[in-house]
Each structure stands twice: as structure tokens, then as C-alpha cells.
Length: 225
Ligand SMILES: NC(=O)c1ccc[n+]([C@@H]2O[C@H](COP(=O)([O-])OP(=O)(O)OC[C@H]3O[C@@H](n4cnc5c(N)ncnc54)[C@H](OP(=O)(O)O)[C@@H]3O)[C@@H](O)[C@H]2O)c1
Image (cartoon, rainbow, N blue to C red; front, side):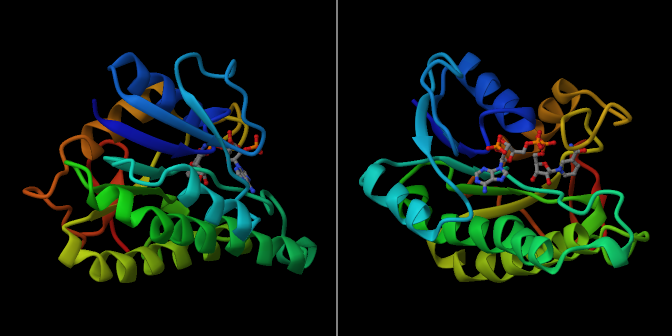
């Protein structure tokens, strides 16, 4: 049975991803700050707080010797939404880096051994179109810069993992109607996850993701770095 671990699985895009993989018969580890078996029926709940390095280390102990086909770093924060620069709190900016960039890489590092034992060997990272240096707009300094930093860190990590045949993917989910995306989002959650799954599920060691053309939009098109 293929296995996936998803962070931020308690609501929004992460929760829908967990439910979608469960429906397809996958073993699903649903990681969230306040885990509860009743949150997603059939999933195995894991406690994970991205702002706590000990919590990330504890994942390794909990998952020892379990092959994980896909680790999906989905959890994220958008702490400076709609804020002009003068209103952005430096602590929020640092926290954005901690949660959106450093923690996903540490989780990937921590679970790389589990992924390398699996058949598919994929680590997916949810980034944002707002991270693109090529198509950037104004405001959202903390969010944009933390996701741009994630993109760079993932490219470094991907090179480090080449010998293990681990594919690292960066995906923009679209502007999705969630708590983060708001009701003004362009697409619903189902459209986003169906598209992203089409990209992620076809990647395996014989079909590695090529990062040269940019990172993935949810519909499979590429967004320039
Ligand atoms: N929605 C969009 O339009 C959009 C666009 C581009 C990119 N994205 C990205 O897509 C991903 C999912 O977004 P979403 O729209 O589903 O957002 P969401 O509804 O706000 O959900 C965010 C998830 O991240 C979790 N999270 C936040 N801080 C955490 C921490 N310290 N430790 C563990 N979990 C934490 C939240 O858990 P709690 O419930 O515990 O807070 C929640 O499960 C994010 O990475 C986001 O940046 C979204």
C-alpha cells in the first residue's frame, strides 16, 4: 500500500489532500499541531508543530523503518496578508521564514531516509506563485520572501538528494478558496488538489521532476523562478 505524510492536514488544502489519498487506498499520515483520529477518518494522526524543532525530530522516532512514498510539505502561514511594509512585524517575518522555509526543509531532511526506502521517492513542497522573482507584485514581504527562500532551499536539497533518487517538487496550488486564500480565491480546493495530484502522482525515480523550466502550477504548467 503506498504511503503519504501530509503536513497541515487538519484543514484547507492539506485536509483535502489527505482525504483524497485515503479514498484512493493510500496509508495516510496526517500531521497537524493538534492531532485527532476523528479529524480525518482512516488517517493516522501525528503531532507536528513546524515552529518546534523537537516536534520535527520526534517524527523520525515515530516513523522509524516506515517507507513513505510521498512527504508533502503543505503547512504554511501568510502572516502579513494585506499589510503594507510599515505594518509588518519583524517577528512575523522571522516566523514566516521558520514555518514556510526552514521547517519544510528540516522535515524533508528528517524523513529522507523513509522516502528513500519507498517505491516512489517523492518530497513535495507547497510554495506560491507569489514566490516568483519573475512575476512578483507588491506587498506581502514576509510571505513572498519566505516562499522564495523555500524555492531556493528546495533546489539545494534536491541536488543533495540526487544520489538517493529522491524527486523534490515545488507546487503552487492556485489561488484557492481556503482560510488563507479567502473567498475571493480563483478556484475551489477540489480543482487545486486534483491538478496538483496529477503532477505529483506521475513522478517517480524513472521520471524525475526537471526543475530547469520553473516550478509547477497546480494545472501542470510552469511558473518561472
Ligand atoms: N490558499 C491559497 O490561495 C494558497 C496560494 C498559494 C499557496 N498556498 C499554500 O498552500 C498551503 C496550504 O494553504 P491553505 O490555503 O490550505 O492554508 P490554510 O487553510 O490557512 O491552512 C494552513 C495549514 O497550515 C498549518 N500550519 C500553520 N502553521 C503551522 C505550524 N506552526 N505547525 C503545523 N502546522 C501549521 C495550519 O494548521 P493550524 O490549523 O494548526 O493553524 C493549517 O493546517 C500553504 O503552504 C500556503 O502557503 C495557498
